[in-house]
Length: 313
Image (cartoon, rainbow, N blue to C red; front, side, top):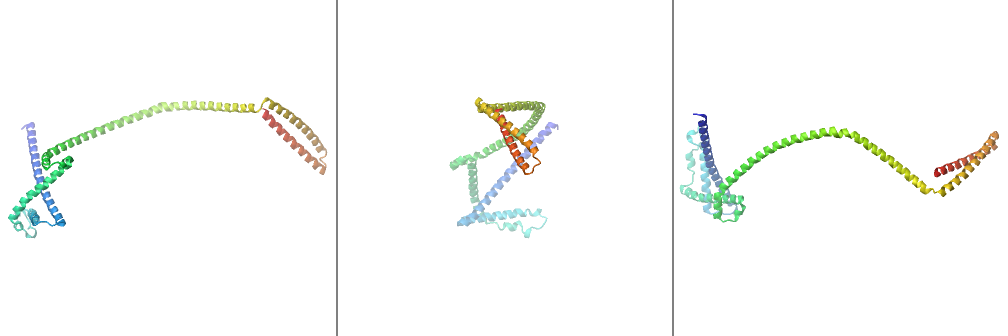
């Protein structure tokens, strides 16, 4: 057998295996659904017994159903007698358990009603699923709901397939997004490196020149500000001291200078007198006080003359 024939055979065997798996899965799901529906019926029965009184037929139905389930489960737990290597628990055999089965007429009656109960329960579940999937169907009639439920499986399969396709597409998009993110990150890193190099080559080289120009500008601006202040000062002096005021200050200065000259002459005379009478006692003290007073007056007039000269200048 060549390679192509072998592959074809393996493909057929694999398809057949998957078909059998799906068949077993379907059979198991049917049994599981039926088991759960029956368990729910029993739970509802236990709840109803707490809320209200049940009829004798309801009690008989649920008791028969529960007894049948228990015996069946215990029989399955025992397994085939020929396959056991150890004695059964409590020495029970299937024959012992089968004796606990409900009467056949009760079983037939229970099974007939069970079919109706299971059908009703499954119909409710299908309608509930339909209304959950399509809330607008809640107001439809049972006939229309039944028709929609008949196609619900195909609709759900289609939606499941679309969800799987969307999920696969999302995974592909996520992979593509990760690749683009990695590419963009590398591009951004290269751009940042380029910007850093441009900054170092251009911005930092011209920074010193820019600082020098700014310093010159500030220096010229400071000089202009000083000249402007001096101009304002001269303007204030010009407005304050007119020609008449200057002439008056000049006369005052001449008088003060004459008075200072006279005081200096008096001080010189007093110094000579002081030198002549410095050998004297009390008379010397008196002359010292007079000299001190004259010197103080001279200093005051000199100070007034200096202030006057400042004001005139």
